[in-house]
Image 1 (cartoon, helix red, strand yellow):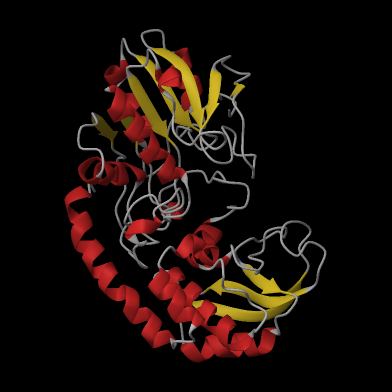
Image 2 (cartoon, helix red, strand yellow):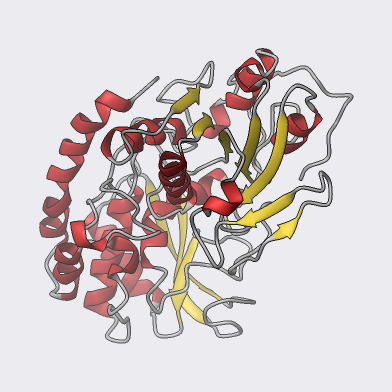
Length: 386
């Protein structure tokens, strides 16, 4: 966990997150309760103090267990994780990204409340919302309250983009029938899960103050903490819903470089024709620059890759999922070595995956998910709290 900074107590952020509001309320909602906390290194108040430390130090409540998501309680891992002990608090840390993805009844025994405090990035296959759903399911089964300490959607709460996963294709990277970019906070997602999946869960959302749906993370006045090892900037979080869609294929998405998700490439790609094909589609808000790079780790480690450097030129116009799918159509047309057998792992929509494989034009691909976007924008209205 992050070090407590006792000298810094005043909050200068535009937005106060759920932990700040809970602290302002002197933790009244949790008084007298025995608590489990689902968190990681992003669970910080505006003074940089870890939520785990704040709850552990409170005398009128009992923090009994910690639960860690993908990447671990400190956000350092890119592999499956085992259970451990937190050296700072001495509490057990139960991994929800290892032998199990859902807390067991034994781990939850004696708990009255599960608190959830993790910074999400607003993308369906970024697994923190799946961990939230699994925790809510376990809590409903045992009659345990869930308290979500809300945080902003860093890539704004307005834009919705992409297709629904197929009903039979739900998974840990497609937990619920939502589009790739959902435009909701993690608290709002919990409200949707409760209404549509877990109607008997006792849910309490501690809302942010000062957040507006149009805000991007850099407008909230909050300190950026990498939510996972390769999510190092707001630019990368903005690109991720589109570029990340393709990373299960034989394509480097820049892991093993200094700028993951800002680079794509492979040894078989000729950068100039690929850049020209994407420019011809006139996807707004992004510049594509032909380049070569050599990943130091991950896919194509040590191999020279031709590809593209991506620069967001207007984030209000840029639609990352559209760009990612447009990139897929261009790769299919130009690169016979690009393999599409794992394209649907994160896309989770066989109709769109098959349309890409069949060289359906970009306009035809876009039509396949525009209806889903409109349907979701209407459906989510009942669950928005800002």
